[in-house]
Amino acid sequence: MVFFLDYRYSQFKQQQRADRIASLSSYHGPLTDSDRETVEKPIERLVAGVHNGIIQPLDILRTYGKVALKAHEKTNCLTEILLPDAERWLQDGSSINLKGPLAGVPVSLKDTIVVGGYDATVGYSSFVGNAKQEDGVLVRLLKDAGAVPYVKTNIPISLLSFESTNDVWGRSTNPHNPKYSPGGSTGGESALLALGGRIGIGSDVAGSIEQGYSEKKRLRIGMLRTDGVVDPSPACTRALKIAEQALAREGHEIVEINPPDMYHALKLGSVLLNADGCRTFKSFMRSAEWEDKGANQMSWYMRLPRPFKWVYYLWVKFIRRDDVWAGLVRDWHAKTAEQNWKLVAERELYRAQWFEWWNQTEIDFILSPPNATPAVPHDGMKDALDYTAGIVPVTHVDKALDGLPAGFNIKKLNGVAQGAYKLYNAEAMHGLPVGVQVVGRRLEEEKVLAAMKRLEDALGDEKYDLLAID
View 1 (cartoon, rainbow, N blue to C red):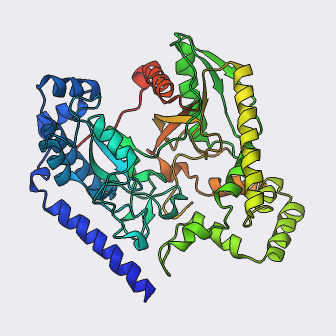
View 2: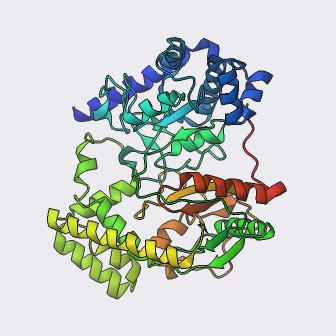
View 3: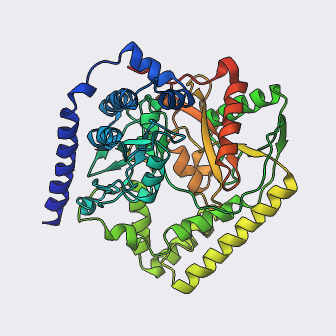
């Protein structure tokens, strides 16, 4: 019976989405030259045009709505379609502040974000019908700034996966290669942005004390080549080298860094993430509801009796001799409230260590691979510091350049690295985008964006070409 509820509610939402899309006849035509000009125009020029009365916000919305629906046809990236209400918000003269700094700019939203009148299912069929009457805080702030929420985008159920799939909305695919994931948990956003979207909101960020900053012409950039747990794949290593050389040519100072133990962050993060033994995210699932592989593995392990876990830990540590994997699984069980608070205190101490280390190193940013591999295939399976990070696409996987070296033996890797490298195949991944990660400190979003722009400019003719908009 519960299985049929999952199926019924999922089918209801998918049919509702299809009906809403079908009703938008004015959004289904081909992109005109004017549409392409609008999409290619910098955001600040769109805002200036709205402020000056030269550009109509409805025209911008209809262009971006067309782009979003075309992206959805290719990747199944959208969940809730807000376009009819977005038109009404623009026309009623009070919902959107068209004098704000984002006047008339369409903004896509991760499915978790609350928009009045629309569900925020997070991929759970049990959340269908949970629409709130009022907008959430983030949406109210966006509207007050003049932005126009127009679509919501897909995520993985539980938000604990590198891909964006669930029973309610289905599977989102990578716009470069449909056999691969667009990422997670904000995968729908990434697919839409790759196909012509321009501003998308993934998640809100907790804050700390801001520090004054004056823009520097010459940046001091710390190179984080590996986290010490999983070395980056050849494609990711090559992308990092391209970015490093581009920045060095522009005169920026490149330094090697040795930050606090990152394996410790992995252990802390993995335990804190599931300190309740995976009970919370499992509690929302109906029987037989699809669950991504990573979340399924964690919840299965959490359910094992403690003696079984201990035997497995001993086998990994002393028979497989894998200290990295053993160090993780040893503590994977539900925590008491007292144990959880001790872990939180340990995390805050770790953040303080990073704070002191960064001050002593005097770097402006860290440049690193965003992940060990470019993408993950479907059904293959962070931030303990709460730092600001942005991804800059640099190149594509090249099967001729990015194959694994001769003599590579996956069995010699630790369990975490094996999980990553089982998914790496330069031949199958050929053409997928590969990026680098620019990391700044907490509440440094503007500075990280500026550094990303510096990197893009430094790449020059090597700059990554976006997908063409149909």
